[in-house]
Image (cartoon, rainbow, N blue to C red; front, side):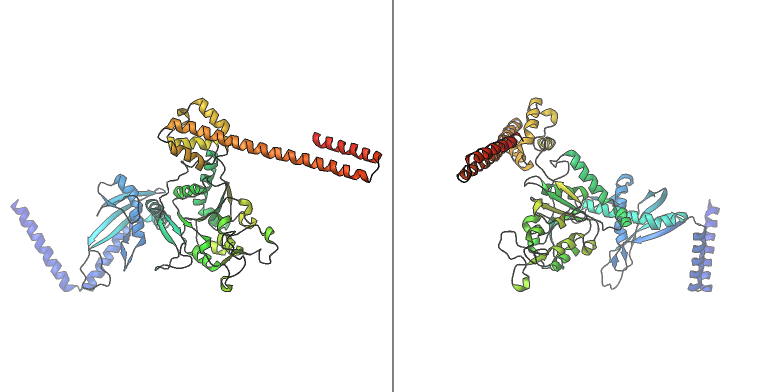
Length: 519
């Protein structure tokens, strides 16, 4: 044992002497060149290549570092034994991350890569314009040389896309409005935002299930159709028109679309926009993956059918921003002292012109209670691609409302009661808002709520039946009045026409009336 320690001490002495001799004989430049050559030889024979992704690139934060951290969080929570937990600003969930100097293995299209989170102390600096963290953080990516093209191409693009998706799901959605008109805030933005917390989803939306499935499939095709829109040369946008009576769930549909896709909502108030240039600026300041909404477009701006306004020389292009009936002039410009105006062409370019292509993955949604009042130019495909009729509640929608408000499934309600509800549902023509009000009022007594709803439906159905019968009676009275007028005209003509001719005409008149009655 003593000889072993003696030999080890001699070897260490020889190594120290050799190191000092090398430093004296060989200058630092030569030593650095030799180490560089040795490093290249090792890399030449190595089957792996390495990539450093540092947290700070110069003085700026490396976006790729944050993306990798988010991407690896979905794997770290499953495979990692020691995790770092974070929750960002406006985030609704906790993000998992690799702890210091921890590692994991990922696979992509059959290619395996090794990720390591490297944390080292940073050298102290005497002076810096920007304070730097005490630790130097970064990710070390190791992959085989034969997979270099896949890693630097498709894999890193996949990491960035996945990170953006995770960030969008974790962040709270925002609801924007242009309440300040065209004025800008301190950051130069014309939009104000608040957190969007609407709980409406397609699962809770009172609507025909087949129609909901069709809308959801169309939204998914749009969200996943980037390559399709690029291949066909179309702007990555889509327009939806929601029309129907008030209280049929048009606003709830918009909220369900935003929650389904994870998009922000821009609620555009046209009465606050003065000119077409301001409208374009608002569009340019919207982000991708968003829904731009113009609610009650038939009330917020007077965009009636141009055929009805042909008497005015400017009625085909200029429309008053003031609501219909407010007394504003419909063609004057703001410079002339009249009401602020927006041209129809400006609104069309906003939805389907060159300016609509300044962003990607955006949805335009218009809502109206009277679709017949809108100009046909707003309704054609390419501007409003999908027209969704939000009608009165059907029996399928009623079952969804019973489940939402009372927790009742189809088996929880008596069969006879369900049959009565189904029979009277179509004739009642009640909106989901009306039905919801009845159920909310009696939600503490579920049985009473269902029976009271049945009575309300029967009452509404009787009112509609009486209304339709009165309309039919009015039509019959109109026909009888017309017949009496014809007979009176024939009697008056008796003073000028002989008796035989009068009798002949009366007989002809009776024959005509009999034919009309048969028809």
